Image 1 (cartoon, rainbow, N blue to C red):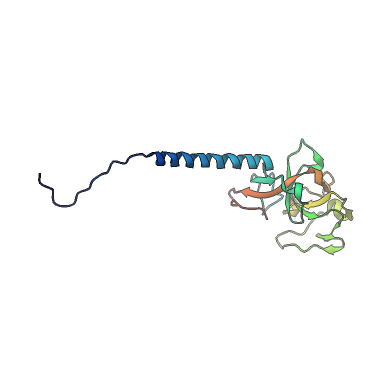
Image 2 (image 1 turned 180 degrees about the horizontal axis):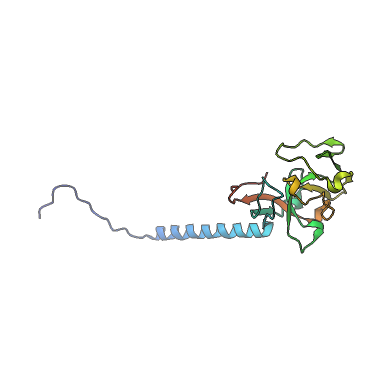
Length: 194
């Protein structure tokens, strides 16, 4: 038989080996195990809640999904600047509030001239926060108890927070956890809560 001149392409028939099948099933198993582990971790140590309202703008937006770490405060106390999720006065019929921790247990908090004072000293804050128009119950000095925190929304003049008589200082037992990750919406992208 004469050979054809020029380029020729031969297609090799690929054989599926036992090693290839084993590798495919191993990869699928590890992917499934990783997804299952992630779901267990989120449901064991965290909860997902939605931001309701504009009280945390520009950090969080209305309708934005936020993951809450329920485990961290079993080991550590909330710190100034943390964004926490809590039920106001432990009311289980309420939705979770998301606010920023300003005052820590044992501190004296007062709002004077639109600014927050802690133990008589002006709290140094970013310029992104508006001057507070209504001091609410913090017009007179509030002394926080051993397990109480003073919280404010980032959108200071559109927030129901520790200045409000129906919220007041937040008891540690009412804190569900720390906001640590938010999923984006139109105005914001996915990222960690600062």
